[in-house]
Amino acid sequence: MVLFGLSFVVLTAVEVMRLRFPQNEVSKLLFGQFRKIARDYETNQLSGMVYYMAGVTMSVAVFPKAVGVLSVLYLALGDPFASTIGIKYGKLGPRFTNGKSLFGSLGGFFICMCTTALYFARTLQFSSALAIVSIIGGLAAAIPETLCGRITKDGKGGPIDVDDNLAVPLGSGLLLLALLTCFYPALLL
Image (cartoon, rainbow, N blue to C red; front, top):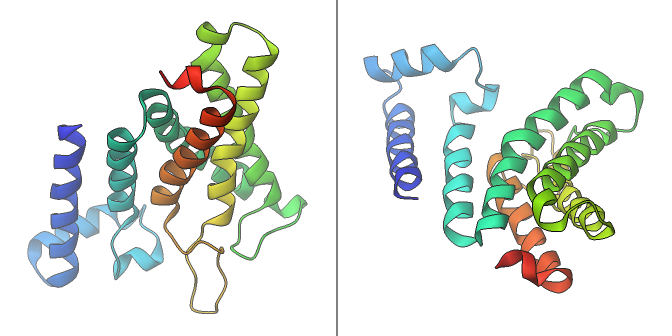
């Protein structure tokens, strides 16, 4: 936990320095190395890495172990899988106002459902409870992933104007915690 917090602080400090002093040689070197993988808006704003570390750090610190681990896995596995499926097959189905696609959201739901099933397989064996908890996990991850999205200059974006690197672990963690507390509280021990 301390390592995550320290990483977040160092990364945030480097990003703030990069934005505050863009002509500094260190800033040019750092952003020059990451420009290939950076999104356009990250040139003048905090990069997604800061939100990623914030989401991971808060999830590990705040949620019970199972929820914290799963919310980080949803970010690490579900978010890129949803993006990949959305980019490859999103044009075949409807798109949301934030640019995300139904197929991308379904892909994220599927991989997070499978991740939840694998995580709880030893505890719940192969049972209807495992199937239900897995669906709950998939939904808990897919909802914030689908709803979040930065509002662009033309006014398009998701109803939640938060970077998905922060929204996915925290939103999915909150939803998963609430649903497991209601239906399967023993899994939170």
